[in-house]
Image 1 (spheres, rainbow, N blue to C red):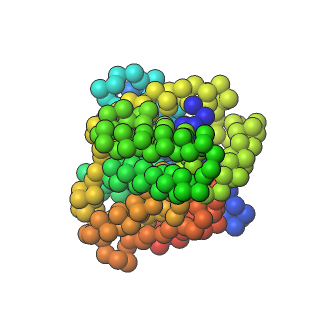
Image 2: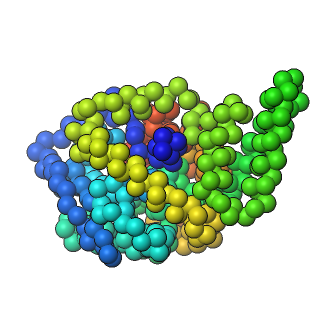
Image 3: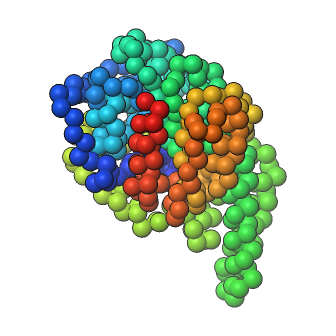
Length: 361
């Protein structure tokens, strides 16, 4: 469970002083929460920010995670925008949901469309922007393919559109590291371990990812420990910053989650994530050609050492967005950062997002 919390989710982000201090007079700030009805369920939603400004809908990671992103965007966006946070089907404080047949990408797109329509009706005459992180970035592209007419602009942060590419890229990286270590290692125990890793990588690569959830846990969390790198962190020492946040009582007050609710949400997340990762439509997802229909402005953000999605994923996305004029699409690779970019390069990360939304709103 801790592995999933640290790896799959990109939800616990640190704020930076340069993003603070926005001053606006007479701002109509709101903070309200409610449930949005979707097919056979209800989605917990929190809306915070400037009621007079454009809307940003935040799409959290996972699949199966939950949104406590208020903690991370409150000093970045909530004075300039009205920010919508919601827990996706079955996750967080949304209704518990166990019907595996409805944990599909198609159903989640339908859910998001209902959220968008609900928000448009509740807060009319406003531009709606999407901001997706990790799985949320992928989720945003899936939605834009079908409903881009409802969206003003979109930021994909560490999202992917070609799952096989990211999986094969990680296997190739680990194979290269293991082969290099074998050339210099003299310890027989370590030599045996590297040989075992190479054999297992070959098995996973040729298996068609039939045991996707377990295979991904092996190559994302187990093998990296032996090979001397971290799939999700270019600066592993920054994990401590995240851990301190989780031990801060005020954090739970701000995000309206108790520690007990957080623990329950993590248990739900593991259940939902396993379902998705063993679903063919997810683990072999490839929408490279489909995103070519998107015409709305898009910013693609990625850490240059992000092995969770594959280091070429950002370039793949950017090239595939063929219908967007160059003035309206951006690609930013962030140096010395991985999947937890907000911790490892916060100033670059947040400034890029703020500049993009300001340009297109």
